Amino acid sequence: MNATWFRRAIGATALLGLTTLITTPGWADALDTIMQRKKILVAIDLGNPPHGMMDAAFKPTGSDVETAQNLAKDLGVELEIVQVTAPNRVQYLLANKADVVISALSITDERKKVIDFTRPYAELQCVVAAPKSMAISSYADLSGKGVSVTRGTVNDQELTRGTANVPNVQIVRFDDDPTSVTGITSGQLQVFASSLPLINQLKKDNPNVDLETKFVMKGFPLGIAFRKNEPKLAAKLNDWVSANLKNGKLVEIYNRYHGVKIDPEKLAGM
Image (cartoon, rainbow, N blue to C red; front, side):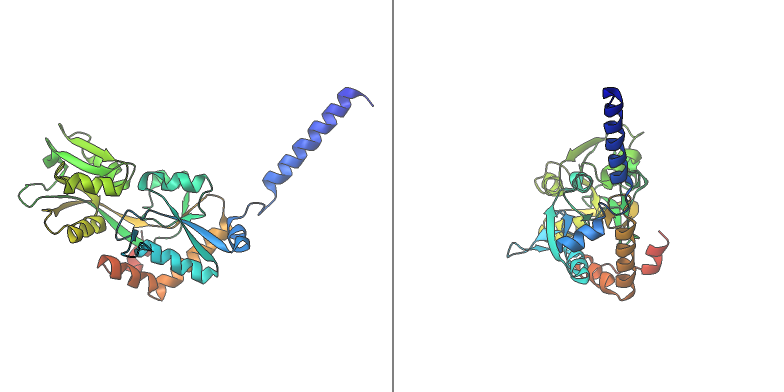
């Protein structure tokens, strides 16, 4: 047998095998993996109350935790919470360290370039808050002020866009929500760009903090995130969200933790 011909044949066989692996449907299907494993790995930031936090007994709780618990129950699998921070939620998903993300993750065009989302299951308002005595009603009023924000969040993105042409704004970016909160409670900063639920929780935990909402930067729909090219998982999750909005479970969970009654019809149009 000609040696050159033999090498070519081996190469062609290897290429055919690789192509088969890549193109065979379902060879790495996420839903099948979850069901066979009998466990779903859900990425949640437990430092973002009331979405995710630890209770007095050091057990995970919050609206996103309870949402994940209900999802696992309905799938008939065990729930494993993968603890993340706001900046690394997407990275954990892409690195296959989590099957899905349920962690106050807003649906944005930028994120949709790299991951997929279910239909919205809730809505999150991004706001700017500051002491009552501060006259702030727009981005322009942030000139000359320092603002605490969590790096890589939609709050960070909206604040950055909104102040692009405003002079002398000092944006202080922290790596996670707890340290962003500490920037306010310690007195290091007085202005906070964050989600309305987190600010409400901050005020509840620290009654002496002088903080009120000054203006809404933007409202974002929240979705369950998963990796691209997972049609079976997408269909399953979307059916689950639709059913649990219709039966009121997701509405009740969000209202209980956030004091806000979400409107399923409004979510459907977002």
